Image (cartoon, rainbow, N blue to C red; front, side):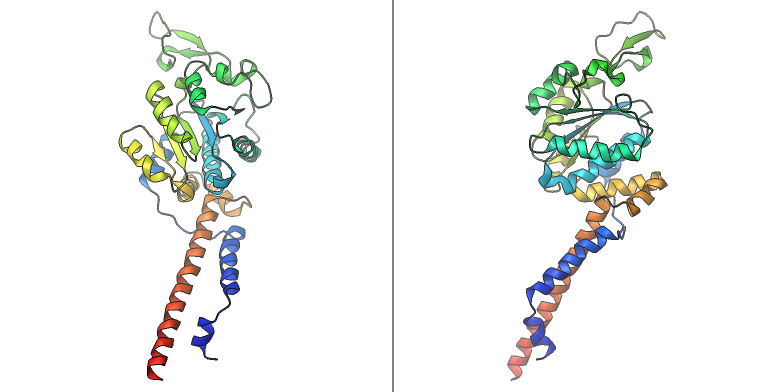
Length: 315
């Protein structure tokens, strides 16, 4: 049997084996292939870089297990960035199918990497709440009405992160606070979503869009979104209108964010190359490998077909 005949009669299980190798090898031994960074990802990264230590941000897990390979790396990358910047983080989950489990897992993973971060002071997990739109509306009025307790059942009024602090007038963020003179101070606690510097929503479906059309539109809180790749195109309109500060589009967006983190913080570059966790960089390496295998077999199949047809014409 000639080489051409063998190619035309190749057992499909060989193709499956090559695809399996293309997926597993980059995950076990990351290649760190370069990824071109898009403007929307750079804008998201630079916005977080512009925040000051002590600023408070909101991270919402608005996706389920089916899109976790895309959304997990971006949520965890964002959380690492916040911890490196010494930002305070409030976490919640609004997706009903597994959102809380994913939030608990990601927070536990990243918190373990930053043992100096104290729960209740540097970050808080408020858990899951049903009815995303209604919850967002309540967050604009009083966070405690939407989330009376954290995921452990502790009233949020007892968490140091939500305790009132003395804030100079120049840093005042709550609407309707009356002050008598510039330079004076006021005691303020975290009460509404309008006090947060940004909301990052790692999202699938419509919940990510609700953060833009409800929270940003009504309360003015800046939004950064991390949608699945299939949903990303529709959010460019929100970026162009100024309703989004940035976007991490799918697994590629997560890998771009990881590369930006690695350039800014070299210790994170080493972490992403050595970690056994699944990351956006590993995912893009595996995806590139699969694409290479597919292209190779398409090429070989067409070459074999053309050679076989030419042989038939001659014979």
